[in-house]
Length: 397
Ligand code: NZQ
Ligand code: ZN
Image 1 (cartoon, rainbow, N blue to C red):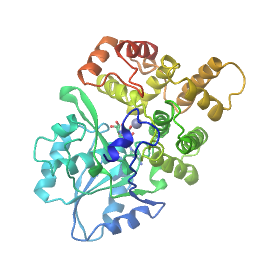
Image 2: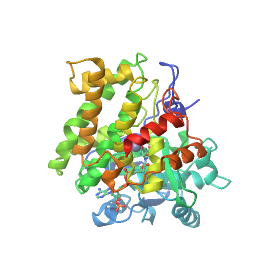
Image 3: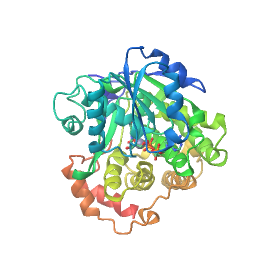
């Protein structure tokens, strides 16, 4: 047993959970305060993405904060980090005798740091631990995270998601050894995000909360109320971030919300879904959609097709989040779905594949891939068989 259980599907109420918080440093001085916990003798690898971290001075700031600690850079990490590229990072880290890694960026970069940290201490082909979802990871180098794009929650959780385009696989893996030792959350670093990524971050966070909340009632009232608080905050402040990109208070709330949305807090001891995430990975691999775009497309369709299995929670969601009081239960459910869709669109994420120019959806291919990748059945009650998935995908067109 371990933190893995936080993410498993269909847990009974309060059966067991394990909560492993990362040391979190928040605010304008977060980076300089956080790195003080790194011993002087460590040999650090700083990982970052394609251009923003250098362009906006984040790499420079981190290097200055590290003072005389030895640091090697590994930049250019792409969104949906690619296995082949990360293996180059593993080689460089081996050559440099790296003992600790810092991911400076969004989920892609932090996940890349986690992958390399585990790969360096793995005595076999690292693809094996990706395929066994992290079960065979027995140790990893320490990882720290400096967040520049709030969304994934990776800075304070035990999971990472890696893609390998040559075999068409995007896959999540988990291990207690992957919890970052520290996370530095400085909201001013998010001022530079373009609208597309502001929207992506808010929608991804919203769906993280939904996938842990919108299942079936088990008496997890603490988890429900925390989740509802985060959802209400995202509905209010997400659109404000688009209008006022340099509003510190708005950015701070969204950043903290992203971390709390997927650090194990709201999902501890309650059933979880994750079907939109898992199916979304196939859409990213096939059509190149951003992670959050796949969620914006799949979630409303999944809510609609699965309205019976989620009935009680959908009504609670409609009443408590959107204040729906009038009408029949079915009307409330339909309204809650429509309002969720409208919110994603307000955040700049269309909710149909055709809106992204994808008019040749190959439903059978996706079902085949989900089956081949051992992903079906999905859902908190394992109710998403290939037939249910087919109905969902038809609504995504
Ligand atoms: O590459 P650069 O130039 O840095 O640009 C990045 C990137 O293109 C840009 N960006 C980041 N910070 C910026 C900025 N641009 C301007 N100013 C800044 N301050 O943002 C773009 C997207 O970055 P990325 O890291 O890909 O975004 P996100 O945080 O959404 O991460 C997506 C990845 O995380 C995985 C996803 O599957 C995907 O691979 N996830 C990881 C999870 C986890 N580890 O727990 C859970 C999530 O559900 C998710 O699956
Ligand atoms: Zn996500």
